[in-house]
Image 1 (tube, helix red, strand yellow):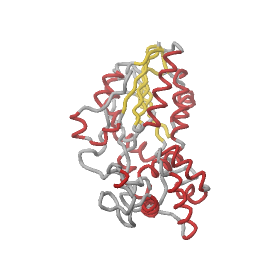
Image 2 (spheres, one colour):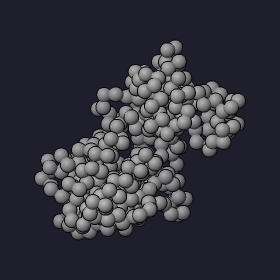
Image 3 (cartoon, rainbow, N blue to C red):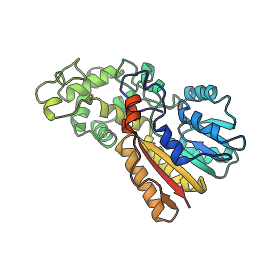
Image 4 (cartoon, rainbow, N blue to C red):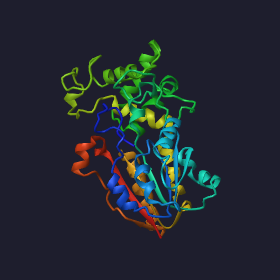
Length: 323
């Protein structure tokens, strides 16, 4: 899986899994292992791990996106190991394993990034790089879209979502602008929302992506990086729509009941909200005597990977081994 969103696709980034060598080295999959892949995506990591398991092993892949499940079935159809692909949020990992008659697994992988096809499809509404409906659902069966949140949340609740999940210091100003705009006309598309956020941040209407496209007191004058002003708001709404942090916390809490002795869990995060939760959970488990952290500091991409897959620059891998 790839991350972060809102970046143009390139042939180099494609569907290349992040930190592939590091995942293989730290998980060290071998014959007979049972692997739980919590975020199957486009099966990039699965295609590397499954052949190492031999016919005695088993690979269980979870994903909430039916399109990813279908693609993964094609990628893994000749894998020399039993494959179970299940449409499910990883928060329900324990229930999935129970339904498959599996008590414990040897290896867990959770890559919290997103597949390129999700980011690049305008109809999914994740990115403001192209116009599309303001959707942002990873699971198309979810009832609430980003447009629903933008239309229904109070100004205070919008500001809270944008601040807590996007770490956006201008959250109140952005929320106020969104409410003012939606009173005139519904905000239904990605470009509509991006325009409103940029204007709230001082960027002239129709401008994006460059330091020169800034009104007085705006983006560049604040000393900001080249990150588009709409990025954090889009991330916050996506996290809220998909309840991503709550699902991650449920997975981390369930790990002790999923793992066999000597098993390893690897989590790849892409922003500080995720990484802080993983770091804290692994530290707490170590303190309780459940096992040990194999990575005291997160593992990041090498210079070679950064050159071939720029999306890997935000990836942070942490690994825990059970006693």
